[in-house]
Amino acid sequence: MPPQGVVSGVDQHSKQILRQTAVELPAAVIELEVMPDHVHLLCEVDPQFGIHRLARRLKGRSSRLLRQEFAWLRSRLPTLWTNSYFVVTVGGAPLAVIRQNIEDQKSV
Image 1 (cartoon, rainbow, N blue to C red):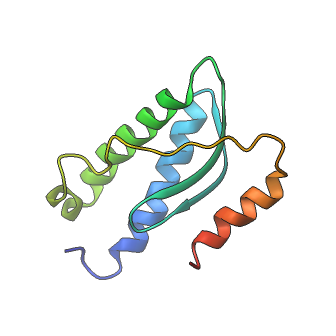
Image 2: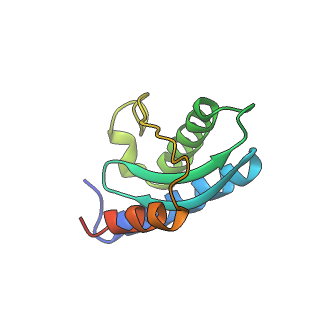
């Protein structure tokens, strides 16, 4: 069980880790919201690098670093994240609409 007030720390640290990791890769985070059990991420990634590599790197690094920083997360599964992820392309949709949708998820 997490100590009081720590969950928001995980939220902010998660965002920092995910953004920093994307900067180091051929990817750019456009919008990001961390939910209690998943993450909404709008990003641009080099097609030669591939979304599957981006997902693996983001999940792997964030799991390792968050579990080092927040000991109570170590009591979860062997890793913080599952192997699954959902990807959808936004094509010609206006980015403002997609961004707003992701921001709105926090209040759902």
